[in-house]
Length: 202
Image (cartoon, helix red, strand yellow):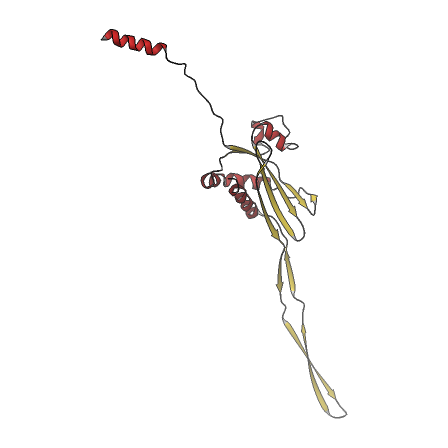
């Protein structure tokens, strides 16, 4: 009996295949957020810094997107943290090419501000440089009209030859006060655009 057991152990040990560990690449989508481009009346301006807002909203709604939409969003990078992936590629000049070379996604944000309208447009490119999702949120100029009170003026005129007194009233109405609230993209608009972006990533 012992010989039989020993023989079985010897035989099974000789034919045991080599153990291998297979490592699969992560399917999560790592995203680099390119600095938003802001234009006012068609001219690029640097007065508005939307980069921190876009980054914080992308991070804030990532968990919701993964839970409800199964978006599989992984790490999110900005200009500071992207050097952990690649210190040599010029992400500011060639964000899509650099993202393609490093196998991750890139978000480009365009904000346009005019006298009567403003909008934010976001486009998410996949690791092959192809648009995968997009979202746009716009806002128009708001105008509020405040009417003015009517003013009354009364004047009395007497005509002496006939001894007749005439009374006359004059009413005047001032022009209404018009308040204009310019169209500005705020934090709420950015958050709405991010949610739409994640929601269309199916």
